[in-house]
Image 1: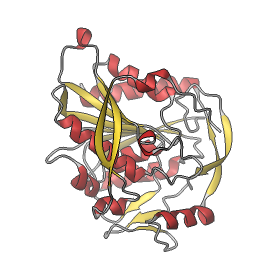
Image 2: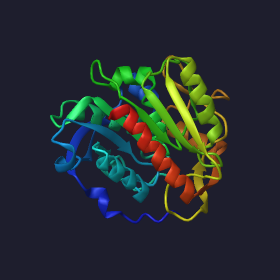
Image 3: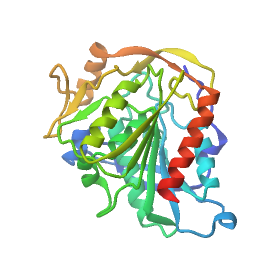
Image 4: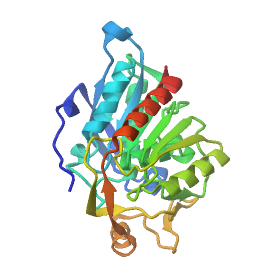
Length: 311
């Protein structure tokens, strides 16, 4: 188990409450059947003495299956030093959950997509934020959120009228979902992925980038050699035997009518169906931990990307 020590930086900034949704799967976003969910997040602005008084560009940052980790907050510090604001939804705490690594049930990627867009709608009207320069970034489960937030049917449902995220930066994202309605935002997307990944494998992400670019998108991927999940952290490399790891293929599809279907024809759009699917189809166990040289490179690549798309 990963040690869930709370970094004191987790609670910095102005805490804001927003109305999101408890959409369990993409289908509940598309058909609008999910109930409202109040969540909260922290808005941090750059130092006005160094970067002026705004309006600032902003990155909506979303955590992974263990919640907010120190390396996520290292990125936030880097962004603030660049003159970029951040907003960090507390998707787990707002729903009474601490981590989901072994279940992936209590908070889903679809819920986190709703949280990110709820933040976007709030920030688009904030006097200190430039609505045309709001990007989204995420790690692991949040990385999958940052990928599929660029899927046009979701953006059409959740984005403020006429707006889109200016850029997407998924870090070791879950990319196992295919879509029949294959339309994507043309906002720049950069995926940062460990080449040795066995938690959220790299092959589906490489294939997804090709698919996105063939259908109106603008994506690229950087593969970091000898790097596993959380390679951008300072944590020791360990093997976690109980976590739910994804297969090396994209094995589920969102149909044109919004259902989540496995390759063997099972509809897993509901909570009970997902639990059953995990019991029969899931691989358990994956490596997690840092690679110091590749951590340094990833931060440099992230800085260059956000400089290009937001500054």
